[in-house]
Image (cartoon, rainbow, N blue to C red; front, side, top):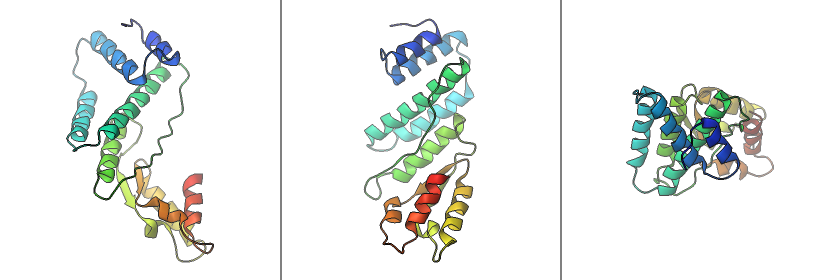
Length: 184
């Protein structure tokens, strides 16, 4: 179905008549018609980043999900422009898989996309592991975790093997790190 107004597309999404991805494509078509095919450098950069994602071998579901996240954010941005209700952007993600399957690479690409669309200021990736977050004595863990959060501000904090934070026993400080991360 063809829509004339952005509001019609947004209403169709709300009513479940079309998917977010279909809505995004419809809104892009509307933009192309109203801007008379004006070259949008931001869109071109995003397409280049998505091309980088597409060049990764396999990861078909991941590629689809990254595009859906991008489409969701774009729909929310357009809803806000039209002064419609929007969903809050909570973009916490878990990447799981064997070593060498592209988790960090996909996270870096996602950071670039989120920077280009204005969700992140810098879009950089800070990669940490348990030792970078957990201290050796009481009070040290919260300080180390907050330092890593400050470094990652405006970008992505990528915690490699994050499950190891919850593995320790009663005297382990990993849970303290989790508490600081959650409160931040």
